[in-house]
Amino acid sequence: MRPFPYLLLTAAILLPLAAMAETCPLTLPQDAVTVRGPAGWRGYSPSDMRLTGFGMMGGDPQSMAYLVPAKSTKTKSGGAITWTHPELWLFCTYDDSAAIQISRRLEGKTCTIRYSKKDGAITSMSADCL
Image (cartoon, rainbow, N blue to C red; front, top):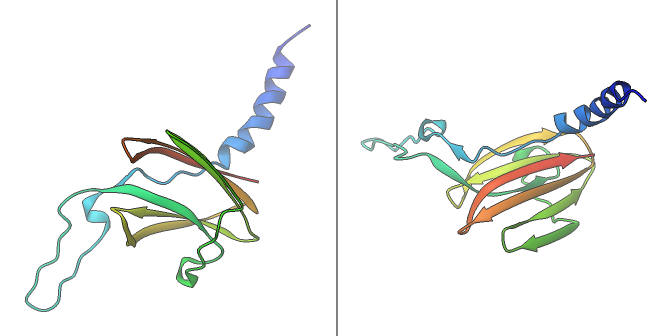
C-alpha cells in the first residue's frame, strides 16, 4: 500500500478549506485611523488599537445590517458563533468602539467564528465559511 496518493488527495481536500478561513487582525496600528479635529484642534491616535469585538453583517457595511447569530456556544476560554445569510460580511471592532471597524465580504452562506479569550481579551479568532 502506497500512502503517497492518499496524502495528495487529503491535501487537495483540505487546501480549499484552509483558504476560506479569515481572521480579524488582533491589533490595528495607530496610523490606521486618521483623526481630524475641527479648526484649531489637532487629532491623533496615541496607540495601536486592540480587537475587542467581531460579528457578521448581512450586506455592505454602510447598510449597518448587523446579524443575529443562528447558534452560539461559549466556554470560559472562548467559543464558537455561527451565522447564516445569503451575503455575509465579517466585521471587526477595536478599542471597545463601534466607531472603529474594518470589514470584508466572505464567500459562503454559513460562517462560524471560533475565538479564544484570556483575561477578557481576544487572543485569537478565525471565521470559516461554507
